Length: 615
Image (tube, rainbow, N blue to C red):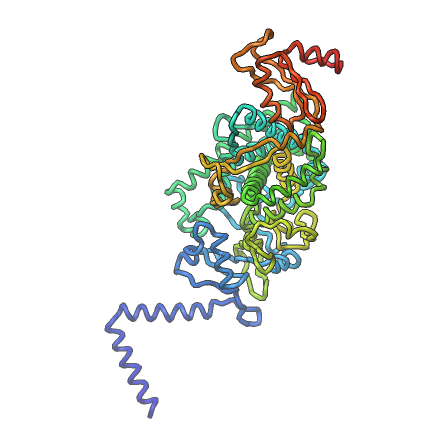
């Protein structure tokens, strides 16, 4: 009897729904979506439903794109605190796995490294890196293995990195000299744009190591620093084509494709010029740079078919150079810039690390690489900075090459993978006082991302077979540049007219890209380290100086004999007195020093006192 009543009721409801077509369409669409969702879940070969990672609620079409915000590494960390260390997001049509756990990274490396070694297609990187012919953005396969082998064994071997130490020392010394001159030319202290100084010096080092000479600007166009920042932003910029393949035409209409191609054309023209210069020199029997640069190595490999088991094309050479130049400049200068920012905000740490550096170097005139290897606290400081400010907040995006199970969840093939290194480094379960700059946490710690692949709570240069091949060279450049600047100078923050600047005054705003760099450059005031502490280690040095409006009998330029470069403050103080006499005596508690402003005096001194000659 009850069934007889139900059927007429159902028939009546159906007739009512037919009178409202729009409402009926909505109901049918809702039921269809429920049925599709239920039947669309991945299943094992035995028909069992496979569990996907948790996923935040998403909008139709755009998925979770609206949840990324201006700083995706921070937004995704906040989401992971709610949904767990492994999440499946949907960025348009692209399923994206987000991992924020050191344990899951360890599971990837130990069990599924090859599966997680793919690279997703990217509109910008495809243009900028010659269709994936480089190392960093190449899809996993035969080509990637070939170019990776070139990088590891021919370009960035331990022996090759060691050969670049002289270049690093020369450029660091040149930076110190420039700052010394600016200090000497100012009576009230000079403000240095440290951000520009660091990226400019890094550019010089990387250019000489890779391209054979300095390239302040390429072909009269944009500077390499400017192009590097542009690449890092464009590679991680939003692209309709990457997330909505059917809408890739919008990238062209809004000018994104044109902007990326403009960057590529500038660089392609520049690399063609560099390669032709090297080829012409090699064919004419000219002298190869010392140390031999990357371009020479790649061209030699290109000429010798027996050296490789494949043909190295010009596009491959340029793509590899693109990796090395801008990977080298940005992933080195950016951490160095953040390191100085943290030291200026933490005077206790700066004082402590300067005491160690000056104690280890002692009375020597230069900081040696061997000295840095004996600076334990300084190494802790550099590691702590890389923890808080890794070169890139995310490991370069990966893609699963096949379906895989990780963390107890099923991950389909062709899933984009984001490893949030920044979130792992900030995890309070792994790091006590995780958001604080506290280098002491690394004292007596076994964590070492350079020498060991056993600790995954610190992964500033990636991990596994896709780890950055140039991290040893980059780490050396960071340490050597910063150690020299801390050895020669004391620093204080410059904030315009405010002489009582506080650490809180330093703007730590970020600009998001493949690397996250400071939005506002660092301006700081250097002061030569205390002359009283260094007079006992004076060395004779010739320093040329302008003598103002006065002239010696030998012209407007004179010579000053002074001590170590470390006592630049003494020299600058003596210059006004030297304008009034050819030479004078300086007495201090460690002896008598003679300062002269006459060219004749200097020649006499070196010829008859130290039996040398000034040319």
